[in-house]
Image 1 (cartoon, rainbow, N blue to C red):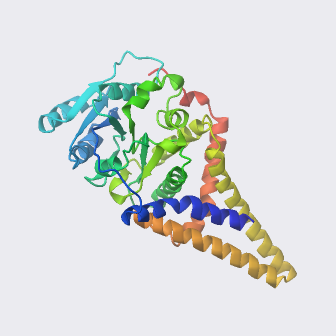
Image 2: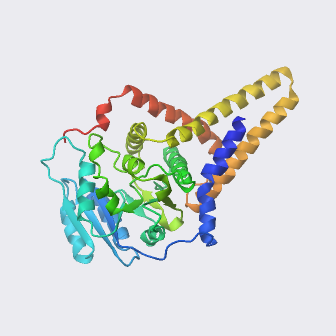
Length: 372
């Protein structure tokens, strides 16, 4: 039974992104030819070196009607001077700033609110300072999903490839989470978004009074806002290698902070989707425990038929998972986990349990608005 459950997760959830990609390549799924105006919004705090590298890749997008708005969140470096220099070369670059007198409010939310209010286009697109699109067709690929039946578009994002086992862990964990989010969205049950690569109609923000319901949370500007204010059937996903975004902050501190923040926010979400995704990890742990136990008992009692059936079910489940992850990884230009997948299948639930336990016994004040 556990093997069957895992096979269902593999082909219904994780394989959904690749099947959508094939459908779009074969033009079995109609996409929009309309390219609406887009405002790219970036909240930046002391990120001069990141903006210097990544802003030109955003500003040089091959798209007819877009603007880029950078909100300088009280930076102490030379961000202001950099933006002034770039704006001389790129007339569609605009900037604003947050006041340093603001207290007891999430500066990230405030910065994004200012950016959205300053935006002049119909759609707002979100990306982080440490992220960059891999193609100049990024905005075009997102815009192809701007239809009358869509309010939110989610894109794929992951860390930049670097040497070392730690980077393998970061990228595998993000690949897993992204395939879950995009897969459940493609299945018509979308429930959240991640502001590294996301677009939605600007009017949605004003119709729902922005982030006013969750100003007491330090984060949640993407996850909770989409979860509470956008119906599942109005959320779609852009599955294309040209719409991929890469993040350069692949380090233990950034990964840990992001994991803890998203786990905290996930506990505040509505809907059954977080529990369904959690059940995937739980049943995978039970499957490995059951396989080890069944093999041990079969060898001890010479139950060779039982040993053969158990081994066959495990190999089928693992083989299908490797096959699906291989195709998805190639589609998004990721590392291939053909050999290491069994290892990560075991250790991923371990670090998930570690972060959940850490969050349970840590102070919640780190995730609430605070004096800055």
